[in-house]
Image (cartoon, rainbow, N blue to C red; front, side):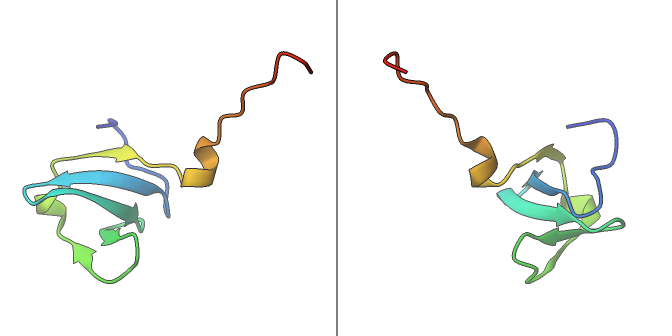
Length: 65
C-alpha cells in the first residue's frame, strides 16, 4: 500500500476482508469502480494503483523491422 492517499478519481485495487475489489478514490471515500456502492474506509486493508487495461499494452518490435 502506498503511504499517501491516491489521486482523486484514481482507480485502485483495494483489499478488504471480503477480498480484492476494483475501486475509485473520490477524494474523501472509496467507491466501487462501477459506482454502484461506497466501500467503508474501515474495511480497506490496503490499496494499489490499478491502471486500465489499455494502459498495459506492451508491444514487441519484430526483428525484421
